[in-house]
Length: 236
Image 1 (cartoon, one colour):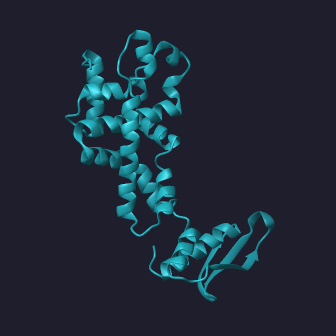
Image 2 (image 1 turned 45 degrees about the vertical axis):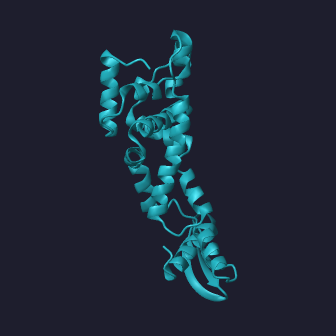
Image 3 (image 1 turned 135 degrees about the vertical axis):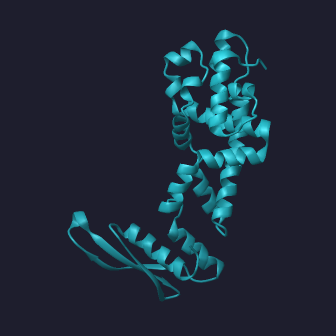
């Protein structure tokens, strides 16, 4: 693997410092930011594809690890839905833009002219490749810690706004685990004009009221009622 030199090496070392993974081989970071089109036009050179494969696996495990520790006792399906919020292309591309890696990605002229530097798929691939490079060079713990740092904003937003939860599904799992009947959701009030309707829903467990919730839609009110029931049973 050719060692990057001059301004290229300086750019890579600045990125390594920004990612807080000091000691990582700049040549691996260079490879993580090299698209296949660069080698196709200037002669054979390693590109990011293999590192992306590795980084995809490391990212998935790092996010799963964080979710498992932060939210114990959830079902595999819940964990999978939660993880999907963080490992999708749009989220990765957003992180790439925040890290400002686009200017230092190596592209062939054709890919450059077609706008590749701004393509979400390419930016997402490079973030995964960076994770793969750090994992390969520095090991799991450093890679995991880096993932948590670059995802700090997304993780905090999800945790503070409860975007990760489908409360009705969680309540159903709660009932099934205890061999109870599935929860029953009943609209007990709706008022206001059609464009500003307000609903109140009561959830009943084995026929007994367990929680109420309000919302601008029946679905929202039902989710809030399920959340209230889970809180009553110490499940949030």
